Length: 392
Ligand SMILES: *Cc1c(COP(=O)(O)O)cnc(C)c1O
Ligand SMILES: [Zn+2]
Image (tube, rainbow, N blue to C red; front, side, top):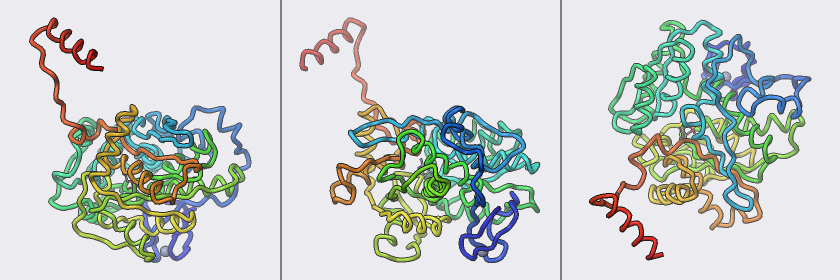
C-alpha cells in the first residue's frame, strides 16, 4: 500500500503512481501488518544484502540483481564505523534502491526508464536497466558530473542528455516527460520503490552491530536520509530492534538548503537556484524529498551540519590514508562528524556509523594530483627508494 506523507491518502501500490494523486505530495510504501515469519535467524540464513530482508520489500515477480548491499562496515575507531557503500556493484548506495525499483518496473512491463542525475543514479540505473533489458535515458547537469560516473552511463548504454543548469532543472524536465503516456518510468528518489531498497542500509547496520547512537550521512536530494530513517523505524516497529539512532545530515556550504533551514528551526528548506560544491553528488538546490527528511530529522532528534569544500577534501584525504577511497560527497559524513565531535554534539562515548555513499573511483579528478618521482632506469629507481627509506 502507498500512503501520501502529506495528506494521508492511501492507494493500492501502482508503479506508475509516483506522487499523491490528491495533493501531489510524496508517497511512501507502508507495510500494514508485521510479516509473521520475520526474524533475525530467518534473515541470517541468506547472504547479507538487500534481498536478505525480502519479506520487508515489495513483492516482485522477478528480482533484477547485481548482488547489491552487504557492504563492509569498517571499524575505524573504538566506537566508530564506516559503512562503505562504494563496494556496491556500480560503486554507490544507489544500487540498493535500483535493484528494487527496476524489479518493480520490470514486473509492470516497463521498457524505458529515465532519471535526472548528478551521476550516480545515472550509473546505477543504466546498469540495472541493461541487466533487465530496458533502455535508459539520463539527463545530467553539464560539466558537473564526475568523470567515472559519465563513463559508467556510457558503458551501460544510456542515452545521455546534458543541460546547462543544475540538477534541479534536469529533474524538472524528467518529471515533465515521465509517465504512462510516454512509457518513460521515472527512477529518481521520489520513486517510493527506491526508498524501499535503500532502507536496507539501516537493516544491515542493525544486523551487524545493533542500533548505533548516531548515523551520519551526506544529504543531497534527501532520499537516503529518509530511507535510512524508515529502515530503523520499521525494525523497531516490528520488534527486531529496541531503539532508534539519531541522524546527522551533512550538506556542503554552497548547497545547504536543508541543513541551513533546519539549524535555524525553520519548517521548510531555504531553496537555492545556484548550488555549488566540489561534492557534485550533493550539488542540489531544491531537494525533492525535503519533507521526508525534515520528518526524519525531527523524529530522530537529529541534527544538521554544514561543511566547507576544504573540510570535505581534507576529510577525503584522511579517509584515503585509512585505506578508504570515497568520493567528495561521501567524505562530508566524516567532515561533519569531526565538527559535531568538536562542538560536543556527538560525544566520544557514542557509537557512530558514517555512511560513505560512493567510491573514490567515481571522481578521479578530486583525488590528489599524481606526482611520480622519475627514475632513469631500474638501478636509479632502487637508489631513490633506498634514499627515502634511509630518511626514515
Ligand atoms: C546520491 C548521492 C548522495 C545524496 O543522496 P540523497 O539521497 O540524494 O540525499 C550522496 N552521496 C553520493 C555519493 C550520492 O551518489
Ligand atoms: Zn496527498
